[in-house]
Image 1 (cartoon, protein in one colour):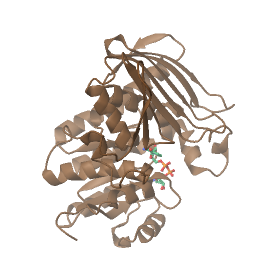
Image 2 (cartoon, rainbow, N blue to C red; image 1 turned 180 degrees about the horizontal axis):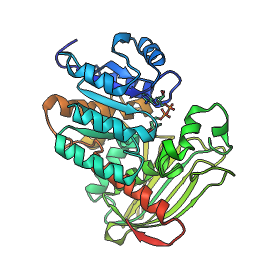
Image 3 (cartoon, rainbow, N blue to C red; image 1 turned 30 degrees about the vertical axis):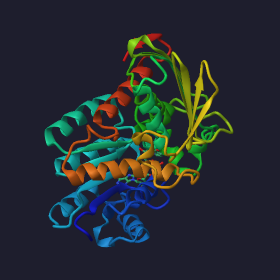
Length: 375
Ligand SMILES: NC(=O)c1ccc[n+]([C@@H]2O[C@H](COP(=O)([O-])OP(=O)(O)OC[C@H]3O[C@@H](n4cnc5c(N)ncnc54)[C@H](O)[C@@H]3O)[C@@H](O)[C@H]2O)c1
């Protein structure tokens, strides 16, 4: 393996899991990162089976992530960072153990299961000086980065309103009571954490709204619901927002929007017009102007800014999607490790974003139905 290749371990991502294999494909897409070890399942046999499926040495697959970290730490070719792709309740203990053993961490969202854990994790990140990134996937899309760049540049004028929706329908029935592993842990407060839908997809919507608008949410007024009878966590969220400079906003997230698939849509309106980006058509960014015809920007076009053009791997008209969006985060993260730099000059979400996401979940859950509260 070349010296330039960054070595990655994974916790989670065992047989039948959803996002672990996506992380693996994304991490290795550009040839800069190689998966070398993992605790892919808490069951050692399943962990080794996953290793064989990933084409890595089963001798470097463990049922216990602490054992994996201890073994990797003493190898000259040991892992340099850990990708965390377990259910939410393990994000904090795994990230803490990894950072304290000297590894960098790239974790999936939400950062932790509770706000207290996120606060504690922020201290561990600061104390260890290791890199901690979060895969808020949508920040990896080239046209989301373009949207951020054009808001920053002032193309829309001052931002006046933000509308973000994340609409799914796959939890419209109590599928957590069937053999659906992904639904089972998401509906269990012990594994999902404080939030149901809000922690699962509401945090993505919250993050992408802040990322593109450049404004932080300062207040919120939450109406969270458990629509499916017997469900213990929310499966539907309707939240009024107040962002910096008093800008009003709306966040709607639902997993009981029957028939919807993965409908993340962001609209940001300024004085001169509004931008509109939808995840199900990610290679198009629409700009609706107050005083001139609508403009449609296409991914990978030469007229985009470096922030929007740079991450694309293919010429315009050759669609890139979810895996490439993850890969853009991985590429930036690997580059920061390679250069021995921090994440501040990159677009990779950090512990700061993780803390904000968990504060959002905690405040909305605690003040559900109680009117406006500060974030
Ligand atoms: N960024 C995104 O777009 C996105 C999309 C989906 C899921 N996620 C996040 O990814 C995480 C995983 O979600 P999923 O849908 O892939 O779940 P999943 O149920 O499909 O996979 C979870 C995996 O973790 C493993 N695991 C559980 N306990 C473990 C332990 N102690 N040690 C090692 N492995 C263990 C399971 O065996 C399984 O392989 C969640 O935090 C979720 O919020 C993010």
